[in-house]
Length: 192
Image (cartoon, rainbow, N blue to C red; front, top):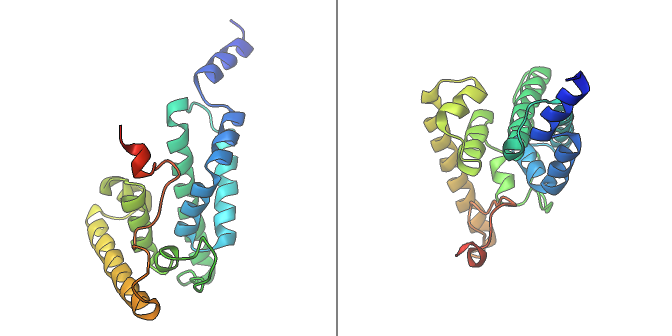
């Protein structure tokens, strides 16, 4: 068997560049929201998306069923690299954007992006992405014992932020965990 045939066999079982392009195009909104929550900045979120797409176009050996989860993991990994790089550049925590009417920075995003870096990553990864604590600690490079306190700090901060926001805007305020993945179905459609 020649080399060309071996390569085509491996591509038949795996994901190729056009497949990843379709995944990123289909899920761009949710991938961008994830990148924005982790990086706290539109420009950095765009860098994260582009770096992740670049990684996707050069990766080999990803099977089709795991391609979407691999894409999210690429976003998470690149966001961590970007946040670490930016924090070394500024020698301080990243500057948090001001609240705005922007759909991506409205509630709950404007509260989440104000969390400290570890608390924000732990909250987003464990609550929204449902990544287990041991994986969160490996991704962030911290002890597993730091994960639960970080999540508690994040929840306490978000609770205080919601209470302050409700005092200012009144009771017609959306619930604190209004984040939706594009794969989540409305309740009417989710029932068998």
